[in-house]
Length: 602
Image 1 (cartoon, rainbow, N blue to C red):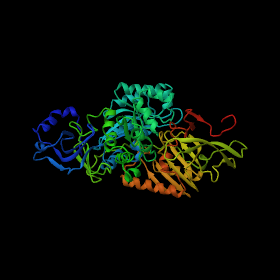
Image 2 (cartoon, one colour):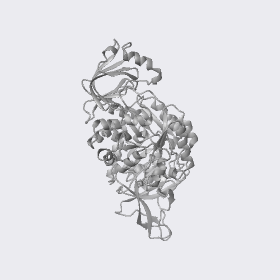
Image 3 (cartoon, rainbow, N blue to C red):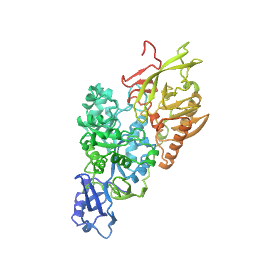
Image 4 (cartoon, rainbow, N blue to C red):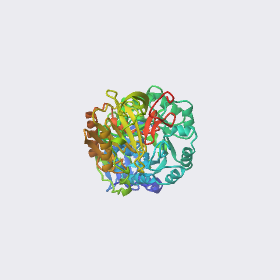
């Protein structure tokens, strides 16, 4: 497997190859060079590589070919820089870092900027360290951002760890860490929260990049206050005007195309029709689960979509390569095919279809025709990462019912309403029937029970509420320890007994996902690493994910990519209404609000 070396160790050796005094290890001949630096496609280009880095790009690398040089004929195929995902969470794939790399390298992704705030909320700095270390066991160039929001909303939820400026400063000193992960608590930033501004200051002092997350449509004073704090990018836009606003403020607009949050088509018009400079626009996936990776792809899929939406291929490729590298300050290593850079590049037959036929990473062929061509280095996951679900007792029906106010025949409740294919929710109210003192979702309302059980400390704390929009019917329930971002045990159901059974099964398998129907488990995904990730290959995880989606449809679920939407119901930093182990959260007010609504409590 290829090994990466810093440029300062190789300058003389690279010069010797380019001057013809030393043979190259690899020469790729007669390609069409997609030069994202100049904006040209240069025919008849050869690339000579020494070790992990490029020594020469030009019309004839013949003088660099020696007896032991490997020669690859491009035969007129395009030479494209390896794709970079500007913002993503490996944990959302449900794969370990090595399994993730094995899945996306054949698709042309050779680098990623990852924010491991999912595992950090479970295991703290030890979880971040695990991701940094495992990344080195892959051929990819994976840059890690220190999670900023552990938890995402202090006081409104319970996580397995807490980060402050000290933890951020410590991790910023690790090799492989490049900046601060998305600062999600945007109301706290705008209000001058001391902890958040301390984390931002520690990052800037260390020369790192501060990742943004402004999830509100309000582009007035709150947005300007947030921008003033130093976040240099944001991936939470959903409209063309969001791209414009971020770029005008000197930020990079990250256009996201994930499994559930399909934001590219709505935003790219800021460039194609609005004329915004595309150099300040990046492409990312944020959250893609294994099924989407296997079925649709990774950054290759995002590039194809961007081209279909009207971007010239060169512009789309730049947004997934050079723009990202320049934003993070690593353009001397990745982002383009040029001397001195890592030899991370692709052979592509047609730019619009973007079908990758060969992937070279750090100077070695790592994938051909969609198949991985190397083995990952071994990596041992620590035992602590496998023992992360601590409930303290067996849950039963009583844990999931909502008791009504005394003598009430109906109850007016706050209800979370999901929005199809978007992260934000709506806050609505509904008059629900009361049966034997217990609030019922009611027939034909589309409303289901929702509960969040604290699973890090065994406190026994449970938040209860209701959600509308999944269309769950019958005696069905879905339980998961994938519940952004504190990853407590999240349970959705039409029946409290089914909810208890699903929750018990998740605890039994050490974390993961379970779907129960009529008393039996009909789908499950074991995720033993922090209750978030599997060490199984992508095919097996994707098959289980597909079985889960089939099971949800059998339970009457009508929501698109229902699990991804479900997994965000406990995230109290995306408007408008969420549920945590501490209760219902009004994200706009950033406060716990009662489940029941009355005249004095609108």
